Length: 531
Image 1: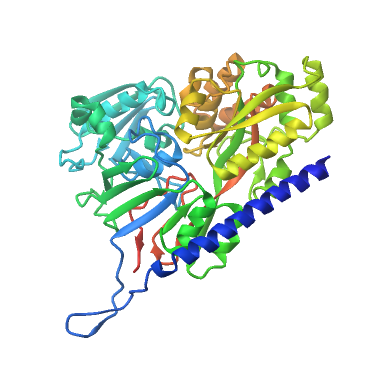
Image 2: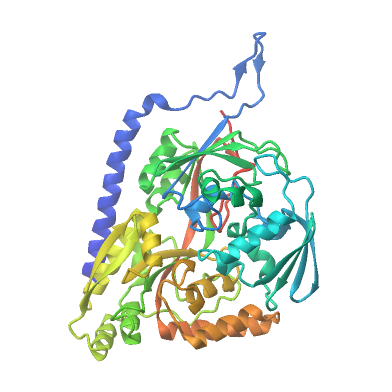
């Protein structure tokens, strides 16, 4: 049966590749006359050759889904942050090259005790409207993020924020919290202008104003977003004058757009296109181990997912290695926990066995000897859809008839946050590189719904271990709590971790200064494109 399933998956992958090739041939023939010319050398006014390298005024990148919200305290999805991270800054920032924490809006900080931080704000930082960023904006922003149902989990370790003077803020924690400074580097804790938001929050959401390297210009929903350089940026004007983000849902189309010169940079290259980009001298492939886990979340508020045996049956009915070999073309690693191995606090509870016979037995013990009908929700991303189709076929083998329902990304997030799904296929990146970021948001009972816990798990022992790990400053205590938590979650099986991915991007060979961020929040401040 497994051999037959493998043949079906290979046929599916082959068919998808053939379609992509045909589309590429048509697109290349249509755009052959639009290939950008190489203008590295131009004639000067006096007829002498100018050998100084020239750069484009605009950098165009493509991503697979649209912005979910321009409000940094709402739009936490990667596709939103890839845009808003150019507009807003945070107190601290993680260097994508080194992984080290660095100052940003806060030029320095002190820690008088385990539960107090004093941040010293850079003087002279301007918002895009020309107003100065002060301690009042920092307090307002952190308080607002704490109050946001979507992102509160990233800052709710904060008890109070107090303005000491125009450039000094005291942050008191409700308990010791080891990842505090890294959490404050996450884009969801962005600093925004108090006066503008208080005056008209709706206007701010439609036309966001930050203090980052780029100013917002326009958002054409479902199509593109345009940003313009902020020349008064505290760290200096960015390298390129204008950024344009294009929404291209089909991964194969993103590669084609890269090959034809329609775009300069493409995120999330599909496995079948990696070699194509790698072997093209006009293109550059970027790859890095990711901090992302893709997983199936089961809504424990709905039957039959309130039954542990059903959830375990689903977990062991999935052949993770087969999915990686066929759909991901070998790019990735079978997941055994909801956080990736590179994340601090990772512990392997043991690989999931693929055992359809045992899955059938568990279903019978749970009262579902004849299986049941259900659905798997997934957003409109081709690779994710194919993974769900593979899981659908695997569940069919044990008697579970699962309909794959494809939703537009915004609706997918909104409706799953409301708990309308049976099962959903998600990707989650541990943005702080610390396990608390993922375990707290995906597994703690206080974070149900929009914050991340879309399995709606409510388990006191899980909560206790998460709280123990996040409040201890003793590394050995934290690691032991995460070890116990990992083992417990594998017994509960509210989520089915599928695989850890590799993060990829493709670029024109003329792109300079791009640094791959393993989190996926690629900053474009220093990126430029030669003509």
